[in-house]
Figure (cartoon, rainbow, N blue to C red):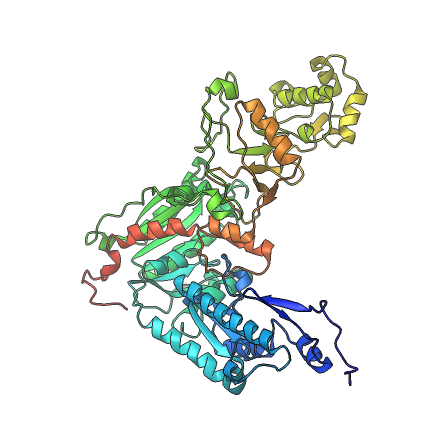
Length: 615
């Protein structure tokens, strides 16, 4: 008799299935079996819920595989990033527990082959994960249901066992910790974190999910730095942090100590003064080294000097330490004066030779081979004068690896709104004439001035207001009453239609990631050309018109900052990108930290005696 409460089928029932090259003819299941199979969940199962509850109860930080920077094989149910553990909750039937005791009588040949295939797949997954240094822990459904505590205690026991074999070489306190950009490389160098300070709750959530658990009983969440002074630790070797930088950046109007965020330097200096670490490393935007901020930087260095430290500062670029990102940051390194005579001299790290390229960190670009760039005479690209403001990655004998969407400047890789909106040759002429004259002092002192109609009439023969009106309708120009005509896209970095720069796959770098986000994109294909004119035209035809570009993802942002594949990001894509924009480049910290370790300062005691062991 058919079951009247039969669950509707999710998919059409197949009459045959192929497993490992063997095809099985399937007899229809009974209504009862069909109803049971339809209600079996493939995720968020009851046994997963049991394990998840216990993980929380035992204060074991975990995440889901979808949040890891690098995809992981096998689709485990839980990940413990800090200890590189993957956890599977295996259903007894599907994964072959006691397969030898039999399978369903209906379609038994198929079910036996299906389950054996699952068993072999699990073995292969275990091997692949092991090869990538993941510890695989699998728990049977009946084990979880009978004693879930025993399962989670097994996880804790493994964590205890590996924690005991990793003694530390130095201790550190992580101020303005963000999501852990300092911590990852310092732990790789043998450091032990005593405590961290961060007030941003989403960043703290990510930090804890990657680094903190029941085993870190001696690691403290320190909270707001403005409320800190003497810390509850003995013999702190190192204090680090990325001091909030907006008050010193151009984007932040360079208000310095007049900005509340600038005053956080005062809190940082106080914490160092009270706790007297053997050394410190603090990071900030390169704007702090701007001549306009010299007095502020001098004051910071003087304050640390009065606290007993010799301080040096230098700009380091992420590209020089292997990452394909043009990211300049200032690093202030301080060493206790009384210990310097007992150590090797400190020197900032020098650039490394091995470097990733964009195709190494951006998905689906790995198949592109490096482009053989044509060499040009500078005059072939720029005409009579090479423009100012070009960065170190733009060579005067090569075409740029990126295009800029901007109406207020011009260049061989500049794309204007009138290039991508249908416009006549006459309209293009009008726009270019406005572009060439808008910065001239006879029309005003600003970096771009409205041009009145009477002035435009002198510049453009036979100009009619109707022509300007059509450009207004196309949203290329706008009229400011009593002043004149300006471009709608009048800010250099604002871009056009939400796009500022598009980088080609063969570029050595991507632009600096920021917390406020970027309007920069990555193209899906490279462009080669024999002239600057052809290069620009091919980009418009093959990339822009076909929309073969996209923004980078949060996970790609993490790779650009050097975060490891096992790192678990925030589940909100936009928030995760902001957090990576705020972070330090981990590879820079690794080489800077190594230079600091090599001085042997962490081997010294404050009284000059040698250390006899770890803390």
